[in-house]
Image (cartoon, rainbow, N blue to C red; front, side, top):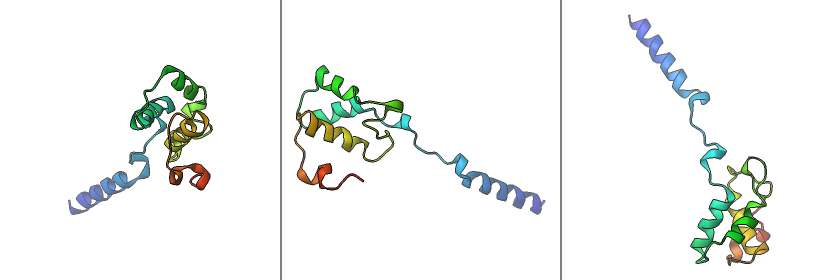
Length: 105
């Protein structure tokens, strides 16, 4: 009986620690560029307009990537912010946050 309980405990331990069962974030867990743009614009006191969001959406690529960066990439939000700042000139960014100072890989 003890062997069966020990075996069962070992099996449960192995199953629960197997990476297949660990939860991982997918691209579906992250917001797309236009949704992030709305948040960023509102945070900077800019009213999001359809024209701005349309320009952001035009840079959304396969699997909702933005200018080649996947939604799950930690730099995705920064790419959107950088686009709003440098390309569209609709927000201000602190120089320390700008990708021209080496924040991008």
